[in-house]
Amino acid sequence: SQKIEQNSEALNIQEGKTATLTCNYTNYSPAYLQWYRQDPGRGPVFLLLIRENEKEKRKERLKVTFDTTLKQSLFHITASQPADSATYLCALVDQTGANNLFFGTGTRLTVIP
Amino acid sequence: DTAVSQTPKYLVTQMGNDKSIKCEQNLGHDTMYWYKQDSKKFLKIMFSYNNKELIINETVPNRFSPKSPDKAHLNLHINSLELGDSAVYFCASSQDMAVQETQYFGPGTRLLVL
Image (cartoon, rainbow over all chains, first blue to last red; front, side, top):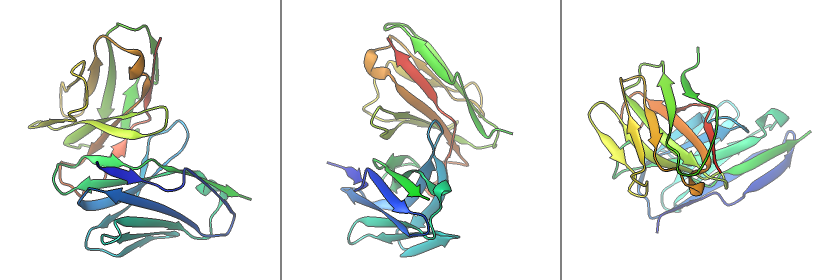
């Protein structure tokens, strides 16, 4: 069966450290993988997109890697801040369909001052 | 200047009722979506729609139907509401159905069926 798993339901880190979130998928052939941020009571907000032929993408303090052999994406937040506390969702677009996003289970990140 | 808006924000209703949730986007996008987020925060696609094509997730009961009066609106109608329909429903839009397009989400409608 198809699965998108984010290994940690919750992650607590100290301010200033690098947060690393993991997304693993099974039985998908993703054309793209995206990361979204969701704050309580709000809709997801797009952060980064990485294509299947890209290994790494960066945006300010954010970095995403994509390993199609391991079927895994890693999402890093460097120099984390309390304002980074939120739930982070990975989502992939399968090559076989339209632009339908299939979301992972989410990781709730808390950055402790 | 809200990009994707939904009404109502909260909806509490009795089992068996019929209800609608409205969604509007002012981004000029061609494609709109509905997602359901359950109590475990798992977000799942229900529909994707543009003026040419409706794609329905096969697991969505036919009590749910999207209706689009124009390109900027995609409303969600739910007939014969059931307890299990309680969830947060998110509308989203993207420029078109191309697979690389970013999706923009609305704030969500929290539905509680009693």
